[in-house]
Length: 247
Figure 1 (cartoon, rainbow, N blue to C red):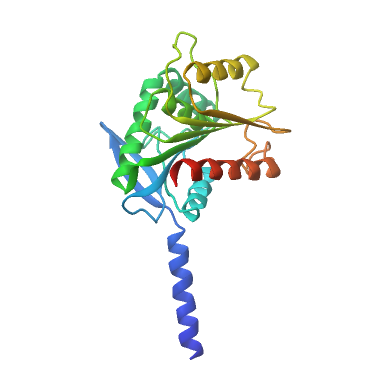
Figure 2: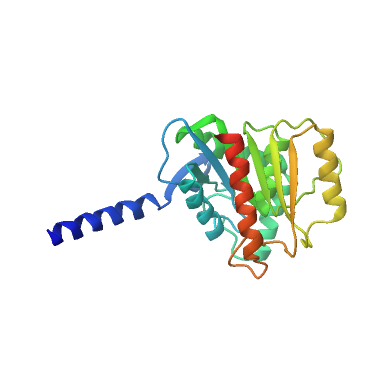
């Protein structure tokens, strides 16, 4: 009997571990192969979240977010923005590659749309999808809103808030949450004020939460900027926002 109980426990543990693993998901944008990661709970007509990773591509913070979203009842897909064979080797390469997409924002929006299409193929309910992004991905979350991509809401987590001065402010239908570290040296007061102006002129449903004593990558445990208290609060604010717009 003890052996049977041990076997049952082992099988249950294996099943639970498998359920927590992320699965490789290959998809394409034209000739470019993309390699995303998706949670194991994908099924039809479920609320879902697209995760846009930081400037070096899919990292541990994005992976942990996907697993935490799975526990909260969402399908989560981590998008591959750069594509197979294009992972930045260092900060300089990441700055160059992310900078190209920030400048060519329409290409960024298209790459996000391709990931959204794939998420729907994996079972996401079309009217219950949100986008969250970290750093460069936070910029992408704002671009999803600016581009009118078909999502219920976006969360920009310590993302760049600026856009080119020659871009007009247009109506924004997507709900927006910006999680902004108070001491982010990469975001100027002008950038912040221009975003507020943009959202107001676009008649958006928006909110900005500013986290005290927090530098740029305050949510990433692997960063010297990590602020555990504020990171926990930011994640709770993310879940509250997602619960409002997706459930």
